[in-house]
Each structure stands twice: as C-alpha cells, then as structure tokens.
Image (cartoon, rainbow, N blue to C red; front, side, top):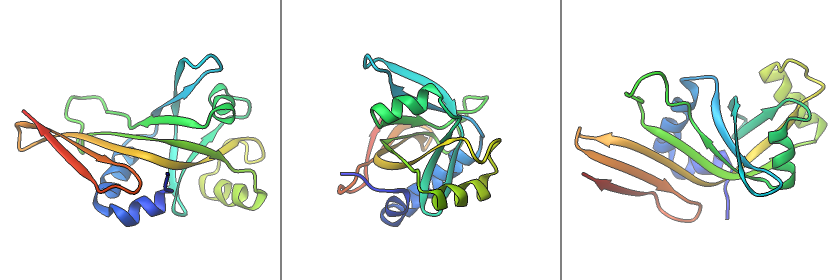
Length: 159
C-alpha cells in the first residue's frame, strides 16, 4: 500500500509540514536506489513538493533514473545541514518512484521548476510507503515518528 504526497498531507498534516520544511531548508538531499545487482547506490538529488506530489527530477540517462526504471524502490533523506542541530530532526521518506511521461504533466512541472533543459529530463512522482522523523524531545528523549499508509502515526521514545 502507498500514498501520494497529497494523501499523506491529508492524513498527517503536522508531520507533512515538518517534512516539507526540512527538505526546503536545503537544495540537495540524498537518494538511495538499487543497482542491477541489488546493491545500494546513493546520489544527490533536488526534490519538489508541487501539485500535491513529491517529485524527483533527474538528468537524462542518469544512473539513478535508470535504477528507478528497473526497480522503483527508493529511500530519500533530507540534508542534515552543516551542524548537529538538525532543526526539525532527521527526516526520511521511502517509497516507489513512478516515471511520468505525460507531456502535459512534464510541461507543467518544467514551467514551475525551470530545469536546465526543459525538453530532456526524467521525472518521477513518489508513492510513499514510509515517512520517518527522528528528533530530540524535551532535551532527553530520542523520539521516532513513523508513518506508513493505512496505519496511524506511531511515536516511540528512548532515553
């Protein structure tokens, strides 16, 4: 089971706002995909939250795009920043990337984002299978919020 960004936002608006803010704090984030042999590949990536979707745009022929075409599973981690503060906590999203080839959708995205070459890029929308936020609560607890489609938001705390 998976949800798009709009469905996640409707079910968990508070967490969605925190996640968007964390991703919005920096331009580049870390995407993990699976290579042909099943081993992980991590690469930098810019993401966009537009039109109720989480978008992953990539240069034509990039290895991460080819990985996602072959196996759509991904994990995405927000850039933690330059210090240990990580305002908003550590945020990760997992899911499946669905390639979008509809010319009207691609054009709408390109109009909003202005990619280097609007005629040549891979565009994927994210279907979410998990959103995780890890942060320090009250200065003493390590708190982990875990959301999965069809389940309530779960928070665990450790000292």
